[in-house]
Length: 240
Ligand SMILES: *Cc1c(COP(=O)(O)O)cnc(C)c1O
Image: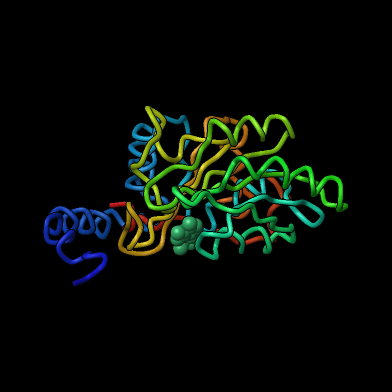
């Protein structure tokens, strides 16, 4: 048995996909074509947030808000140890320090009851500057955001929701990728919303952040600040 059966998924949508790919070949706008903006609008409507900014992977999607918040050396980022390597990788790429907070035994998501004491320990025992929390939503289940947001507010920390494993999930009426200051997902083929290639997206209600993210996506358009770090875009064929 195939764990993730992409073939039978494809059988159901194959003719539609072929037609949409044909359209892209016809109009020739392979990068940032109309399908990309279409998809962003549909996804932001679905999630219920103002902005969706697509990019080349779930990893780049996480990198972009952290770059916008100037995360770098000396910053402590609190996250779950029970995740795909990318969550920690982006923290290290920017030179910041990941600080792990253990998971709940029933949800496998970050345990909010351990978060506050871990933040206090870092403040007391290290020179690191607590900057952000990256909760990871595993197995379709968002982390406990009501509790996490209270702790984030108390310590004035950003929250970045890693929704790569939970797109389509929800808590009450709150959809995955609607929590925190920004949220990200991945369109890697095996993820809940996969594409035929690599892809990812950032979601946020914050206009100023959205503008920065759109700039970072095209190598720092309009500023020179982000020119040296490479993040990429979602190709049009991946958005069909
Ligand atoms: C897959 C995944 C990512 C990274 O997504 P890519 O599109 O592969 O870069 C990040 N976090 C989690 C939890 C993931 O499962």
